[in-house]
Amino acid sequence: MTHTDLKFFTNEPERDLYSRFSAILKSNTQFFDILVGYFRSSGFFKMYEALEDVEKIRVLVGLNVDRFTVKIIDRATNELKVSA
Image 1: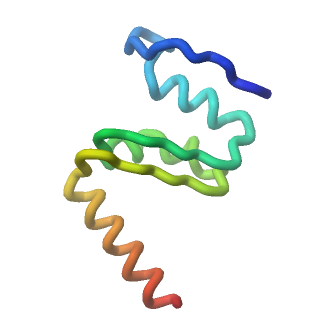
Image 2: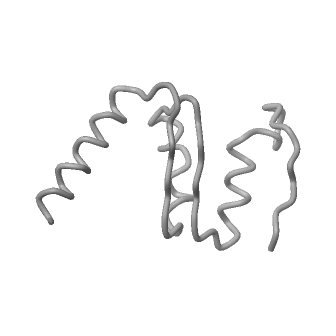
């Protein structure tokens, strides 16, 4: 299934970013690459169930992340070093 809906997100019912991502991710998504200016772990936790079957997830953050996200990244980096 190809998604060609390139409409703007207006935060009206069913026209918000969460609804759009959820619809896209339900259709056998293999890779999820996203570029964001700001990243909050609360938004990720809202979407994580839809992302569970995605093979590879990459998030490029431009300006700012919350403190909890920094802790998660540090922990994952340390676990990778230990397992290597």
